[in-house]
Amino acid sequence: MKYHQRISGVNHTFDGLVDLMAKATPLRSGDELAGCAAHNDAERAAAAWALAELPLDTFLNEAVVPYETDEVTRLIMDSHDQQAFSEISHLTVGGFRDWLLDAVAGDDAAAKIAAVAPGITPEMAAAVSKIMRNQDLIAVTAATQVHAAFRSTIGLPGTLATRLQPNHPTDDPRGIAAAVLDGLLMGCGDAVIGINPATDSPQATADLLHLLDNIRSRYDIPAQSCVLSHITTTIGLIEAGAPVDLVFQSVAGTEGANKAFGVDMALLREGNEAGRSLNRGTVGNNVMYLETGQGSALSSGAHLGTGGRPVDQQTLETRAYGVARALDPLLVNTVVGFIGPEYLYDGRQIIRAGLEDHFCGKLLGLPMGVDVCYTNHAEADQNDMDTLLTLLAAAGCAFVITVPGADDVMLGYQSLSFHDVVAVRRTLGLKPAPEFDAWLKKVGMTDDAGKLTKFDLQRSALRALTAAG
Image (cartoon, rainbow, N blue to C red; front, side):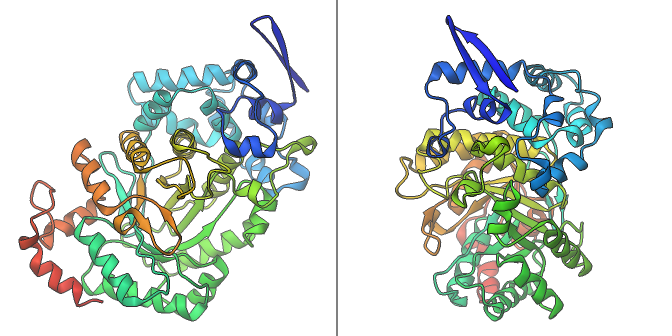
C-alpha cells in the first residue's frame, strides 16, 4: 500500500509502511547508510505528517517484517493483547500521542498507561515516538512506572539505579575487585555488578562469578551480579552449579539478527527458566538481563523487511523490546552510542536515540535502562553524555551504566563515571534502589540524608570491602 502526503505544494509518496516509518524518522547516519532515510527535511516532515494520520490498527494488518519468515513478528502478533488495545484502537498515531500527553496531564497516568501497554506493539511505540518532541518523550516516561526485582527493586519512582561495570582487559581479579570497591564507595551497583568478560571461556566465566558472589555474600550486599557471557555458556554453568544470579544476552529486533547473536526465542526462554530455577532472588525472581542497541540488525545484514526494503534502525530496536517483554526481565538497556558514528553520528543523534529507546521500552512495560555512551571516533563528547544522563534521570530511567573514570579500558568506549551518577542523584533528588540504599546507610557509606559520607567516615567500610578482593 502506498501512502501520500502533500506539503508546501509538493506531493510525496511512500511505498508502504516500511518506507513511511523510515522516512518519518529523525535524521541518523545508520538510516542513511542503509539507504532508507528521507532525502531532505521536507520529505521527512511529509512522512511524519502522513504517519500521524495513520490508524493504529494498521500495524496489526501490515507487518514491517514478514510474519511468515520472522519469529519476532510472530511473537509480536501472536501475543498482542486485543482487550488492552481496545482502549486506544480507534486512534491514529497522532491521536495516540495526544492520548499519552492527556494521560500525563491528568490523574493516575501510570495506571492508564500500564493498562494499555500489553496492547501496544513495538511498531506502534516506534511510530508515536517519531512524531514526538524530546520534551514529549520525557514527560510520558516520567509519568510511567515499571519495576522489577531480584535482590534489589529496579524502577521505583524517585530512584536511579546503576550497573557497576568493573571490566578489565585480562579479567585480573585484583583489577576487577578494585573497580568494584571504587563503585560501591560511590553508591553504585544497585542494578547489577556486571562484568563483560575478556573471554567467553566457561572456566573464566565461572571464576568471575565466584569472585563477585564472594564479595556480595561476604558483606550481604543486596545487589545481583552478572558475567555477560553468551546465554549458552551461562546455562551450562547453571547446570554445573555456578552461582549465577542473572542470565545475560544481547537481543535484536529480527530473527536474522538474533541468529547472528546465536539465539532464538526457544533458547532465550530456556535461559530464563534455568535462571529462575535457582531461586536466588530475595525480593523478586526476574532473572534476565538483556542488552540492545540501534544498528545491531543493520550491522549483521538482517535489517530488511517487507518487500525487501530496509527497515529503519529505531523501529528494529523497538522490536527488540518486544523480544525482551516476552521474558519478563530484571534489566533491559540500550547501549545507545556503542556501535559508532556509522549508526549515530554525533551527540545530537545519540541524545535523541537514547530518549527514543527509553520511551519505547518503558511504554512497552520494560524496566528500561540506558548505557549513556559513545565511541572516540563519534562527533560527541562527555558534555553530550552529561546532557543525556540528566534528561534520562528526569524521565525516570530505571538505571544507567557506570565505569571507572567514564572510560571502559576493556571495551574501548566512553560511558558514565561513578561520580556522574552521584552528581545527578544529588541534583535531582534521586536515590539508589531502596534495599541498596538501606545497605549503604548500614555500612556507613551514606548518612541519614542519603548523601555520601566523607572518606574518613568510610574507613571501616573501606577496610572491610578491600579484604574481599
